[in-house]
Image (cartoon, rainbow, N blue to C red):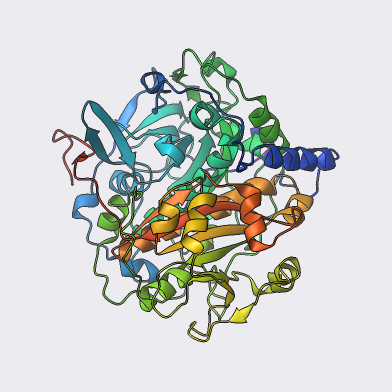
Length: 561
């Protein structure tokens, strides 16, 4: 097994916390992009004038010529309880084995079902995606895993397997422990094909969902995760994304993140990881996803360049996990709940949410307990909380309809109160003592307004509660233009938490990327760009369409362990 290590010979730069000289210009590029990609009541952000669904880009990237290792599908037999994920030490770390790797991907990035309606058939995955377009690609760097050659792999969800992109030379057969890294990238065209210039936002929201999906899957295995403080250019080298000869005319991928999967508590979480691939044997050539693209969106390329990270300042690690308040009645297994996650298409407009469920949802969004201990999945997030949900309550027991706010970092409360001086900011007496929860304004007629502001979608009015995720925008971009990605990812991670918590409560969620940006700000009383809403999310009781047929994600030829 080959130990993973970063060294000067690997050609990797060292992490940097200083802004490059062109940071002011890049920050302005971010602000310009964010403004031009906003929707307004009288116009939408620039997008395609027509869509040919028969010419949709291929949803599956493959590397022709790369050998594939099919992974086991053990989730069906996994009995890990959902509630045990939040009980520190309840799950003994699984050993690094092909079975564990199979479960990791089956509960994070695999297909969860096929859907059919008339002549149409499409796949849904454990990880949600804007428009079900799935721009996120996933890679694994592995050494020391039995029955898996040391190397760099690309995950192929349709087959539930790993494509070997680069085989590492076997140097020291007995050295070190098994090591796993998980890398992620985005293919912007998958989203831009449908959403045009706003697609960069959606790719970053999807990244937040993907980080959450990875963290929950690791929790089922008893593993922890840690973001590695590498420049985006270094991530591209480690994942083989800078190998132009392997892409040719195929759509390139944008490097996004690299995580260390910590398989045992004794591992050194402070160590740097990477791999020198200079002597690796490479295989595979990327397929082209769209042979005849009708549009080009240079604004996406421009903001992508402006937000690339030169290095990463990682915050001090959060203290060890602590138990979290959970719904007492939930007895579901984690695997069944994760794989049953869906986006609701419509809600029962009369259903109500009980108070216990509401406070459990709110508690799940807090990155720390009152004692400072981390909560799952926030121990995987290396940045301070800069996104705070404004909760538009329609039908929740014990709360009057209106707007409320959950302050995920109390240190930011004065800044947000200064930005919204005309709101009530009344602490809610019914709130659990550890939740900083405020009533901003009452409004019994809020549902109709929200339907209009969320691109006239009924899910904005029919949900029990709708969340507008409000981000500290100007200050974050001033700290470094790459934090634009962080803000969107944090919002996406909040969405992933809400998806799974809603499922655990017998409800369902839907992420909403289409909303009229500045009219939403006007509703809240925001002026300027110090704070911006980056995402919406709705939770309610789903109304299921009986015309849509659901079939298993993988055929009977794939044996479940």
